[in-house]
Image 1: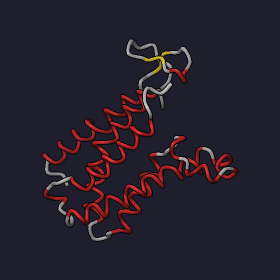
Image 2: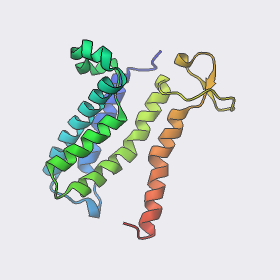
Image 3: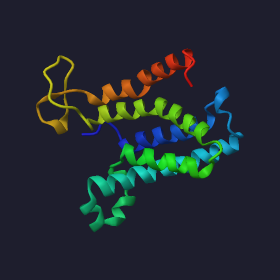
Image 4: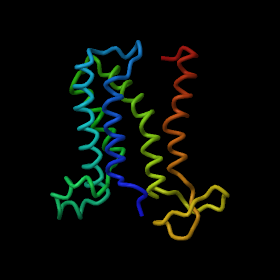
Length: 178
């Protein structure tokens, strides 16, 4: 059972990503005006949603969606793929502005570093994407995983996708690696 309306929470995370992408400020990311950044953010957000949904439909459940193509549009039923979102996001950033491609890619990475962990926490609260069976004291029993305690892999990913990557980037930056 979902603890809250997942579509609303995931939608808020996507909206926050759109806003953060457009507003992120850092000296090496000053690519264009605020209007330009909102333009890039809007099309990148669309690419993330389209890429995530299409990849999920065509890779994870192709037979179902080939027989029910209209349901690809039914985002409220769930089913997104990080890989498809990533690929189409990168392609869109490149197509929109090749000259500022790397700056916009950096902005996208910073945005993802802030918001991917939030998505993983929602996955955890909804009991989605749980890990393998575990006997560790911090294992959880997820409704969809039976009565077997499992690794909270969503929380591991939240830590690795955000704070850990931020730490590595900070260390590399301090070392002068660009």
